[in-house]
Length: 380
Ligand SMILES: Nc1ncnc2c1ncn2[C@@H]1O[C@H](COP(=O)(O)OP(=O)(O)O)[C@@H](O)[C@H]1O
Ligand SMILES: [Mg+2]
Image (cartoon, rainbow, N blue to C red; front, side, top):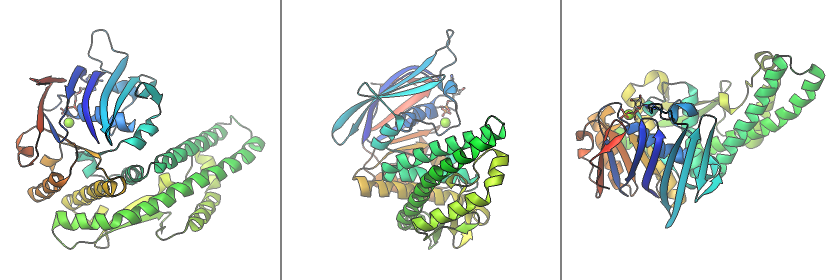
């Protein structure tokens, strides 16, 4: 899988840009604020539909033109299993649209076909962030190993949205109690079914990744550390639970929390509240690990995702590394570079200094210097 080229119009600080990529290694160099991350983001968005940075549609659209742009365009040729795909995305204030070979499709359909894995300084701090970041980490792994999980995640999100809307309408007295009660019960049943699907897949995924996660952790840290990942809901570990047991637990919790949900106007039970805990030699990594150890866990998790993707699909995902090499200490950088060198996949790296990538031995390297949203001296 690789991206052959990209055409960007009015996206972030890029007014107009067209360039082609190496199948192996691409390096975006430049000072801060020149558009290196914006370029990675455009590739990420094309495949995932959403960005890795907090943003609404409007923030993507270039605002610097005298006549303010109303739409961003990102267009690319992707290759997968000897087939070529024209991917196109348009972003307007109120909508994003995706096209494959000029046919409009949902972002979920693109997500099922292509995969990218992003390493960013933010992702390296997922251990100390709120539990939401670790759920995203795990759900990205779920989506990348089996396309049916893309639907399971999106079905759950829809069910959550519907249930929250009903709870909020009732709290705001927009719907009377006799009407609310039966509607809420039937929605809850549907919602819990989707919740159980997602929790079950998350538990399966944790089971699948644990071997590679530990192997990579030992490789990166060159020590015999043990990483154990726990899945916790309402202070209880769900590891080893059957689907029936998960269903029973969530149902019971929904009954207990019914009145709290009604008064808060939002769903308090479900996988959007669950915690994923990384235990480092049996100790909670949030409290007992140094920043370096926390970063090593996330790096190992992402490396495990890449290796596992290759095992199930026969190909590696595309890798996007945003300013991470300079963020790592020399030992971890050395290990990551060694790992990257062995992968037969397309890699994009951004950096302010060429030194950060000089040790990475790859053929067909393309280096692009970014200056205020423009690639300088591009030979394509
Ligand atoms: N919608 C937008 N229109 C114009 N410029 C934008 C927009 N969104 C972000 N920018 C600019 O993009 C630049 C950041 O680009 P980024 O890719 O993050 O830089 P870096 O090269 O450091 O990775 C900033 O100068 C920011 O002001
Ligand atoms: Mg950047």
